[in-house]
Length: 368
Length: 160
Image (tube, rainbow over all chains, first blue to last red; front, top):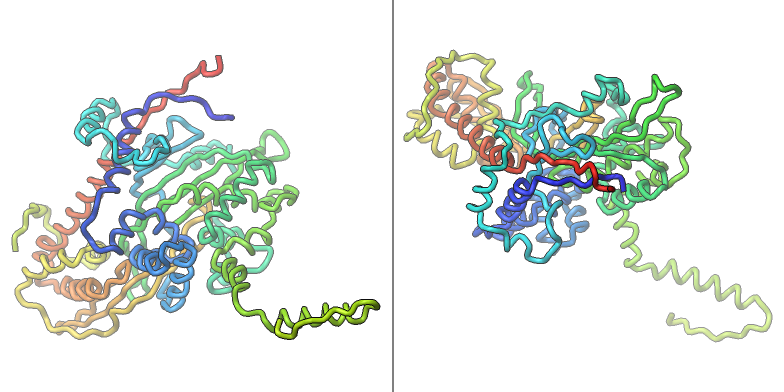
């Protein structure tokens, strides 16, 4: 494998585990609040796939669906359709986010530092692991000697901006997307889809599907050769500009996970060869989905970047038409509904065929 | 009302430019916050609700690759409200989530803060404490996360 062994960071990892354990502490609130608190990653997944950011609604839906997350997504989607859309937000400014977690797998000394946040990336996958961590005081005492000077805030200078300044990565297009054709919830998407439409579709796509497709690119079906430049999770300001006010204002924060992926370089000559980008942005805290989305975003840019579309993950019609779990579950599960007449017509056709062929005298039961 | 936070000594003049600032603090204030800051208002002007509190959604947009063209990420639930008070000020509120009670409070406060006669007191005694509380909470999270800052050391000879 292409990663290197690293040492150090034991105290930071310890603190990261404490943060996970803290979130597991019992809560005297009602069941819905407990679900929202304890199963927060599950709630985040429902919010992302239902495409509606609202923890309370997602928790209520998960409770109603008895833990079936796809059913919960379905319920929230249906509810979402009853809400009027008041307006569009100003595009999120992730550069100003209050980051809880910010890591880079490409650069050891990433601007802003590597901050683990609450993670179990470095934990043993042992049942009950977080219930048996050393006491908080000990952890704090050891953190005090971690030798890393505390910073007031984590200022995020983007790794991608640095690479862009050096001309080593493709410049991202700031051309305004076709406003009329942008939002797939307003205008059904066709093919070829714009990158904006692909990203919107992927942001609400089934995590399992996106994960599987992304995995296929790593195994050679549409190679990306990816590096995570930055993976961030934190709170981002939501800004709106209501026409009746005529100015923009921040109305609170939402949690987002962003993945900036650096991929194999492209270009006709050494001077023009640059790395290419893949991008993932998901509601809530969901690193697996953000990374997989970035891999898939890059794979789906095959045509734009002049690559042969050979693998399933590069085929936008295949990916975008099958990644939505509400659509998928609807069609797959509708098989449970009565198809008696359909089947009767098929069975009579087969009987008619048999009846025509000589030498067959099969009795059949009409009750079937 | 008891204020445990020191008021800022810097005088602020009433300006519409501060409206986004107070609307932001009102948008994230909890019901308890509203009960606390509203208790100190000596006389509330009469008001009538012009619209809402109404539940709806906004579409959240991100940017392709973080800095490119916008794309829709998904919707967010929202509550909005519009009131007009006896002094003729129209108060608006936009609150994330489904929070009708908070939205009504925020709209009433938005109208109240447009009253230049009382603006300074209200700013100092209500909005500033809310702002300080929010910043303290943000800082507390940041401090906690700070403990997970890490310096990894690559082991050069790992394959030796």
